[in-house]
Structure formats: structure tokens, C-alpha cells
Amino acid sequence: MTSYSLDHNTCRVRQQRLLALMEEKQVDLVIITQRENIQWLSGQWFNWHFQPAAALDANGHLTLVAPTKPPVTAAADEVLHYEAQWHSTLRNDQRAACSEVLWDRLRTASTPRRIGVEFSTFGPCLAQYTDAELFDVEPDLYVLRRHKEADELVMIKRAIAGTQAMYERAREIIEPGISELEVYNQLQATAVDRFGEVLTGTGNDYQCRSRGGMPRSQHQAAKGDLYILDLGPAYRGYYADNCRTIAVSDPSEEQQIAWEHVTAVFAFVEQTVKPGSSARELFIEVQAMLDRAPVGIFNHHLGHGFGLFPHEAPHLNPHWDDVFEHGDTFTVEPGLYAPELNAGMRIEQNYVVCTSGVELLTTFPTDL
Image 1 (cartoon, rainbow, N blue to C red):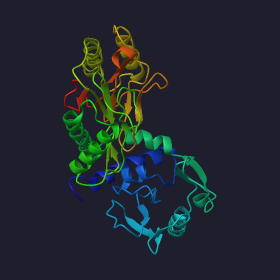
Image 2: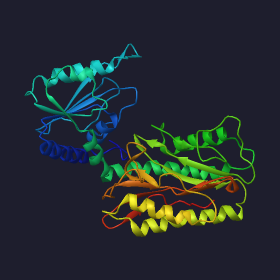
Image 3: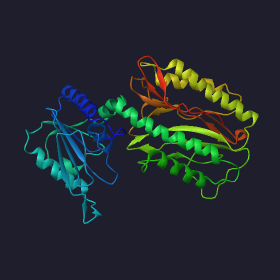
Image 4: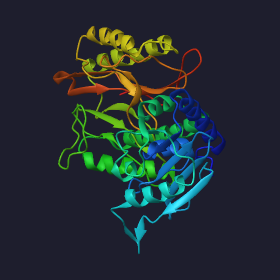
């Protein structure tokens, strides 16, 4: 365990929350195969090329089936292993190997009548071993994951600190003539230096004079451009997601006016959002605010939750009708786009919902 790992005692709290759900849904056993949910429950992060599994029974016993390497330190009552590699070669049949080990262990326990599984990833390798009724627990796990415990907030704040270092570096190097690939490479290196280890994920937008996209090999910044950088590095599985727009040279009057309208949204959010507030209504109100701007249009979501996945609930989007809850971590990303803005701008802040309002997690500058 390090200061930047999930706390095992808090993992046990999350297991108790899942147990309460199991009792409510009359589920005897939950089998988890998605790495994000396994990490949330056990504290153990796995690289994308491994296929672990975990099982929580109605007595609160957590069994984790992990690759033989690397070493595992998890909030589990039992850790079993499968061979993910043979003579250093990764196996393509890891799911089958992991499933066999898990069910060999589960056969020694009482026969479950109803098993909670993630329908999107619970495949035939596992299903072949049971005739029990299967219940889709995946939507409920997403709901449980919305409430970020203190140990998760530490990880998220660490990821956000990486973006702060990246934006500081961006403001040092962005000038006419720099290529998008050079900016991308330098910012990735900055995040690695800040974390002291390899990123576990990265995104999002690195294009200049564009609404977004990955860096283009031949494109260079030019005087008058706006450079939208929407950065989403992940630290040990936990993502940040915040955006800044940097003027390649002094911003024009129109660009500065648009920036004033975009950044006015944050004061409104900070005065408005609290547990029980409607995310859809917030979107509608902000859309009306930005529709009154004298330049540019706003035509995408206002934001979303984030954590172990870049986009989670709550959705600040008219296609959902979510309500803010205590413990939500979420983004707010208003923007205005028009040719006269040289594509446009987007500024994105990160928040956590507290007892009576929100706390700003991205306290670094938003100026162009």
C-alpha cells in the first residue's frame, strides 16, 4: 500500500455496500469481471491485457482470481491465481483459464440460486458452469460507484494534478510554429514525470484551431489560433478530465468576449448545484445562457461524471435525467464555437458534490 493506492479498509466498506444491494435484490453471489469494478471493490488495479475475476458471496467473503504475476495486494479474503502467461507469452484464453479457477473454488461452497453478473462482459466461459438465475448487477454497480470515498478522491486529485502540470507546460511551449505532435509528446512526458510512473490511460483533444481530436502529424499552431487542450490522463485507473483553451498569440476582442461568457457558467454552477439538483435542468439553463452570447454556438453536452471511466453519471445532458448526488465527481465543460473564433474554445472544470454544494477540484488558471 502507498499513499496513492486505494485504502483496503474503505474497500471493505464498498463491499458492505454491495452486500446490502445483494440482500435487497435477493442475490446469493456476485461475480465481477470488469477491471474497473474489481479495482473499486478490492483495491487491486490490473493492466488492460489481464482478465481477472472476483466473487462476493452473501457472507461477505471476497474471492479474487488474479494472474500469477505481478504480486497482488488486495482487500480480499482469498486470492487465487491463474496462469496469464506461458514462458512470458500472454495467453489469449485467459478468460477461460480464470473462469476455471474461480468455479473450482465456488463448487466447494453452497450452490447459488441467483447470481449477480455484469451482462455486458459475463460470457460463456463463466456461464457454462452454472444453471443459476442470472441478474444484471452492472447498472447497480455504476450507481454504487458514483459516491466517491476519500481514497478515491485522493486518486482523482492525483490525476488532476497531472493535468495541472500539463497545462503549465503547455503555456510555456505553445507559440506559432509548434506542431500538435510536439505539444502532445511534451505533455505526455510532463504527466509521466508528475506521476512518477506510466499513465494508465490518456486522452482527449490535442488539435489546434479545431474543436478536438488527436494530434495531426503535419499541423502547426499559427498566430491568432485558439488551442483547445482537453486532457484526461489516468493515474492507477482513475481519470482526470478537464480542458483549457490557450491563445497562440494575444486573443482577439471576439475571443475574449466569448471567454467571458463561457467562464460565467462556472459561477452559476457553483451557486446552483447541490445534492438533489437536476443535471438536465442545469444543462437547459446553461444552454440558454450561452445562446445569449454575441458570438459562437454551444452544441454539445455540458459535462459528465468521471472516475474509473472517463464518462460516468451524472450526465449533464438532455438525453438523461440524472440528479446530482453527494459524492459525485463531475465535469462542467461549456464552449462556444464559430469561424470568427478560429474554431472556438472550451473550458472545463472538475467538481465533487458535497453536503450542501460543490467543491472545485481544478483550481488552476482558466485564462486564454
